Amino acid sequence: MYVAPHALQGLPDHCQVMSVSPLLRELIAEAVTYPALFDVEGAQGRLVRVLLDQLKAAPSSSLHLPVPETGPIQHIAEHLKTDPADDSTLEDWADRLGTTTRTLARNFKKQTDMTFGQWRQQARLLEALSRLAANQPVAHIAQDLGYSSQSAFSAMFKKALGVTPGQFFK
Image 1 (tube, helix red, strand yellow):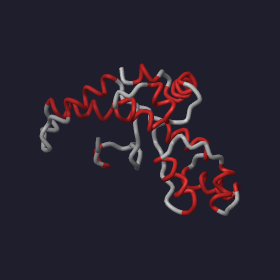
Image 2 (tube, rainbow, N blue to C red):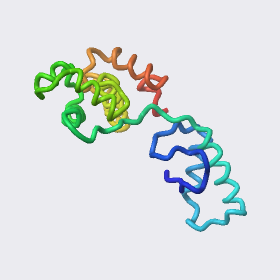
Image 3 (tube, rainbow, N blue to C red):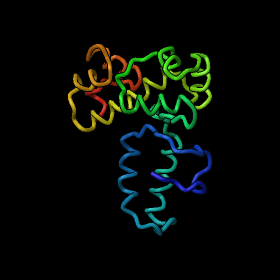
Image 4 (tube, one colour):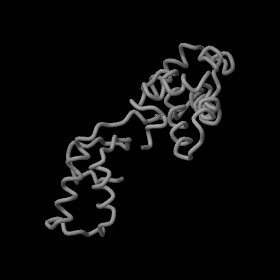
């Protein structure tokens, strides 16, 4: 959903994923049916104001994955997006790329504001969500993403999102 910057003060100045309550979901579903030039003083305008209030109060979600833009960590990120099960350590990557572990760790933190481990887990989590949305079995997802078991994957998922994979899309 796009909200014009002038529509509401205090919103983040960048794209991000927000946690959407059932009320906010229904407000959005209704608002997208409105014409672009709706009556801001009428019923539609009042509903949009409530939607904006709800949006401003909505907490941001932990589903953001910053993408490294330069250097060896860009190569690592691209590889892990295509092969999320790769368990190579930062030391393994440093050896492959002819650099130091410390340099890679520093660059990951600088470009993504995450450690390498946090970034890899987030990438796996987002891939898991995509696969869950496509109704793939949780056991297959866990295996494809490099988890030792379905229960290990489910524990990570619940820790990150507060619900099990089976409960997430309900």
